[in-house]
Picture: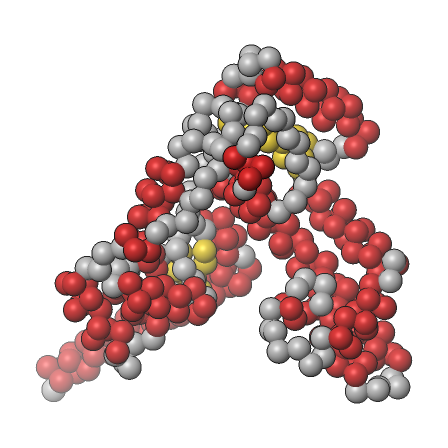
Length: 338
């Protein structure tokens, strides 16, 4: 803090690191002051009987109390649903209202950078290429002694009461392997299979987390009109053989323009991602988050098979009804003749 207050003309370059810290370093503190929140008394009176009801599940309660926020959550996402209901109980306002107030507050506080200007580069690549690189990195970690490190960490943290430490990527995926190891199992084949399974899980979780990081960077750092002196540029490293052409030269040119004050907003990469809403397929009784996943489901074999079965059932029901009507008419005719 003292260094920040005594700064004069400083040019700092930061490489890597968690994006949370980079954001905190660039902008002023953006957390919403909870003392500014005002409860909605009418909303509180309305919410009490719904929250205390035992006839509804949590998702149905949220749909009644905060339909705006409920449409962005999956009915099976119990953690986020419970979090939204807890906010209603604690603050007396809906989660969507709270998020809107936080957004308005953060915009006001984020109108000015801590510095005179900032230039960010994000080195990215094609998702398939990134997945392969992440798999190779995991395999390299195994070669460098991941198994030995797991055994050491497990022996030290065996009596630890902290559950968060056991949720770290690269540890929780090997729980079955470590349990077998701690039970002094002599079944080397089972240990080997458990280790392979943990490695595959680690690869999957790492790739999933990379997608989450990319979305976070796009939503938080890659914004347009944040301030006049803020620039964000994406660089494609899919082909390493073209590094000089697609990475080095553009970086040198952009940095030179930045320091000479000739860099304009045409260099900034903007991204606006709409919030994904829930879509329900009544035929399959499936809820999807986002239009992309919903369209994939609608084109899936499972959906088409169920849809065809339902159509055949409807046709059968209609034909059965027609036959019944014919028999009824025939019986009426016989009765009339008699």
